[in-house]
Length: 287
Image (tube, rainbow, N blue to C red; front, side, top):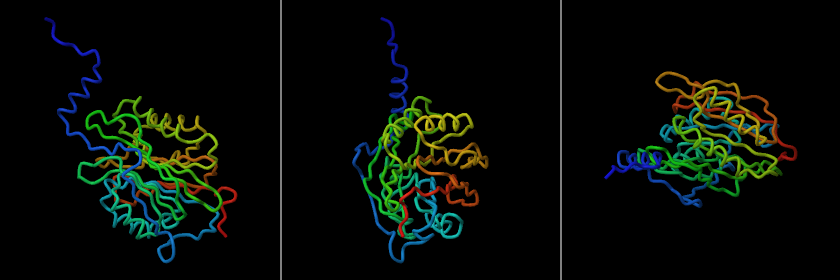
């Protein structure tokens, strides 16, 4: 009798990995868990006034949400962070998101994607100094080839004056994953954006570590009508003292980029805050 030979090598590898590597607990329900809070009012509100001509957006992977006190201190001291209108956070647990929002005066929505190695929840948040509505979790296709970890995007509408801005905070699978898996996750986010959405912001950790990977990502988003607002900024994270290519990006539709940057002096994480100042959309005045 001939020995059994699998006709599905990928499936066999997945089954072997499940036996060798601890498997991640994923929150695979699209409606939760869900957390939110409202702190952008009264004495909690910090930063520039509502009648600012620009919209400052920041994305930051805060490495398991561990150094929240250091991140809060940086937000108060390092420009343009105090002026940030919309903040996209990754690798967060609910306690960390709530602390940052409360201390700095933001409204927030947060969905964990899974449970991290340290036992805390692991997911993406959207914070804003404006009202937030219509929150949702987008479960991205594919799982980590070894741990089975799920990736997601958090989506919500931020109300900037009379304008509804559709916002996504996301964390894409690592660069060593099969390219088809990562491209499928990019595509899932883009497929969720309605064709008639006039003002859109997508940001987060896309785990691109080479210039070629960045160009492929930007090309996929450009084909969907989104501008790469943080193009050409260089390294946004560090590994073993090295600074590979940009991993963290912000894309938008319906805005004009004014300026952008990376804050490499902020060391609360192995990633750096990445920011862009966008020209506000018509009709967004809050005077």
